[in-house]
Length: 115
Image (cartoon, rainbow, N blue to C red; front, side, top):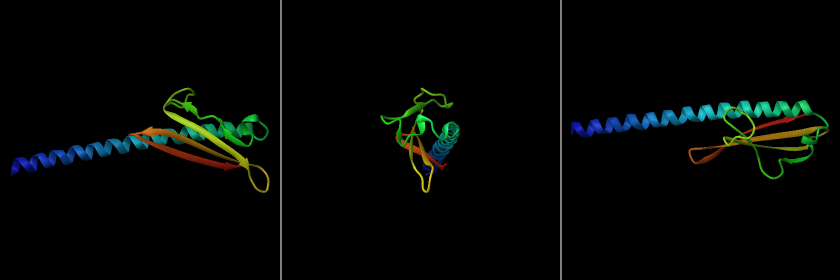
């Protein structure tokens, strides 16, 4: 009986540690995603209003830009795309999406602005 309780307690501790590790990993990924998305949006806003990157449509139109964990272009950790559309009464709406894979699921962070 006491052996069963001991094994149950150990299993509970291991499960709690696994959940805590997963939450910490998720918070780190979300934090990186927010920083990368903010950097990308800032770069787009520096181009406002007449740059080719701000034409109406999805950019890139054939997929995603890729970034590594540090936010440098060309990596595989994060994928980014953005959509530019007309905003009313005048201006542009930029909706940026950053995606990443985490524990077998695709996660995303969206950032939108109107200029």
